[in-house]
Image (spheres, each protein chain N blue to C red):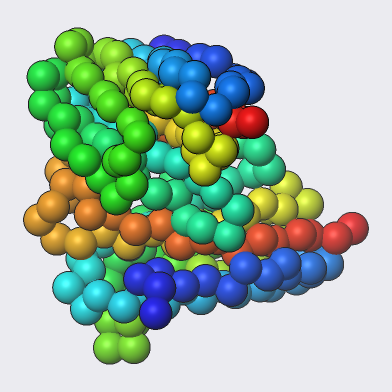
Length: 114
Length: 111
């Protein structure tokens, strides 16, 4: 199993450009999430999904859109990039439930907006 | 006050030393607790869950103190490979994704 994969690994955008960060998992997990990680701050939840066709906002959703048409894929769209969106983005998946709650993270996308 | 607080470190310790990190949380309704490890420029990975009675996994021991609202991670016989950032993670009951990550404590094990 590849686990959680993300593309691209690195991206530089100009202010105002749009792009989609790709995320896929092959573990048949129902739950998927997008986080951003900034220096001095913990991982912050952007959007999440509890199954195909179901998404919801996290802590910092503004400027981002998501959709979940299949169990495997959960792309994150930046509508109009801003320098404040310079960050490392992690996609994660898990099986849900209250048990071990292990989240499996992708390798991350390092995004710079100039 | 931050929901989850950790000393950012760095903790510089010699090989073989014992080191402990604490993490405090503000929400008394928090139900589940975890330690994740994050290597430099890599993704976080689950190190261990933290159970009410405390739990051990090899050289790693995790403790929960609900009365004082903190969790701890003890690493014995530190190895160079333990060098990483350790993230404290707190989950509230009920909401699927009401999960809060601490900013992490950086550990550097020195030869």
